[in-house]
Image (cartoon, rainbow, N blue to C red; front, side, top):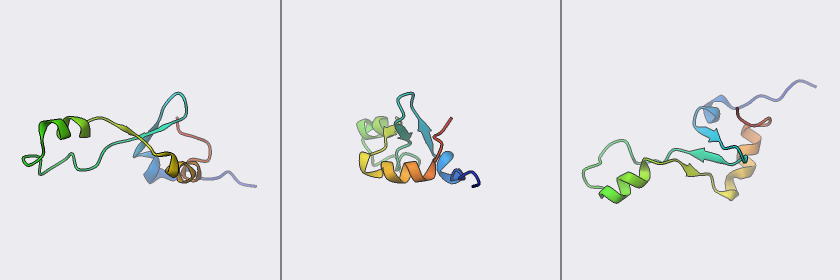
Length: 67
């Protein structure tokens, strides 16, 4: 049976931590920043953990994990 393929679009958008959790960049932090508060812009600059409800989709996208 052939190897399963990694979804490359997802591989470019997520990083895997040492414990196996996936991190993603936050949306809404690129433009139209004048109306957003400093606190909100600061929070948007940090990576966030993928929710547990999305983990089945992550496992399907990365059958062998991410390096």
